[in-house]
Length: 455
Image (cartoon, rainbow, N blue to C red; front, top):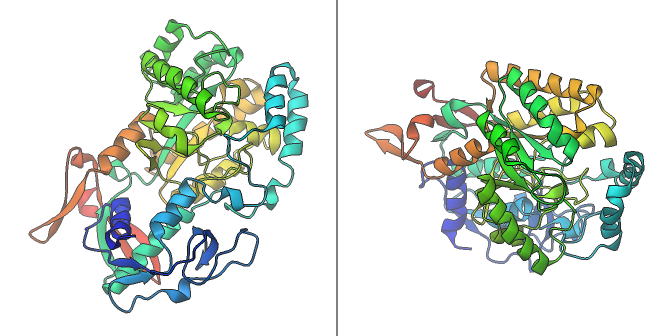
């Protein structure tokens, strides 16, 4: 890796002065990739201190002692670009206990399940799911209920960069517009005709709290999609996205079939006026995303312990997968909360919100119209809306449509922080929405402060 790659990686994330970082990576990294420890963080990739562990449950080598920050450039015992990409793109999953094979691989049991699923009573489906998810709470990595490893890696790198230059405060472009402390999106995957029928009532409910959301629509095979239905969603200020192809759970099972479906999916995106995509059951294969013609995707969980495809991207902030921006799913889905965890409260969601807010991340929800028709589930959702509305009124979160978040993240990636006569200024299209913040080094940790003069 060229020296500038690690440096650019850090400055691109924070949108901070480009001359801050001066990193180099040890030349003799391990031949194989695996798990290792960097301080308290679990990482996956090549490392300097000998061979990494094949399984995350093995004894993991520690690499922090091989850091060198006494002079520039700072020498790193691993490649941060490789490690972060391995986490974001779930490259570690094959070497994880209870990890799943690639979604492109054949899985006879899964295929039989999805063929029989439409004929199964809900109670029978739940029994299958309970059996499949048995032992989920014993999975050690990613960390439950929110994994923030990627954010912690970036902050640790920033610590090293600041220490190496003997500075304790650096400016950067804040993560969200107008100084918002975090961001929230509410999304609805519409899976059945009953869910379609409930969408009008759901929009009324959301509007009663002043919260707009997106509806992910299955274009083929599940239910009729009248033009009037889509027009009503758009007219009321909500967003429409494409949800898979026909929701049969087989989108990523065969490359040739995927490409055929992707072509149809892209046509539906144009027909719906949709900028975003979400696959069925959060199945995903990031190596195939280049066939999808969308601005953003919403199919990667932060922690996938309660999803059929295990894994997780270990981040609470958006990131690019090729040319597609990923808006990760950072909270537990409503179905999992109600029917796997048997929890009819917002306690878990509140805990996840708190952990995400600590990193000023994206708080994203999947709420199915199909699963909140019943009064008990709807009551929990109303409590969630009230909680989010309160956070917004306190200035703690920006509640936005997914397309607005994607547009902002693209805008922020093009902003530059420049020093003009000793004062910092943000330049670029849309800079009036951005805010200068400072990363402050305190007791070997990074804390963030918004510039009061810019708020």
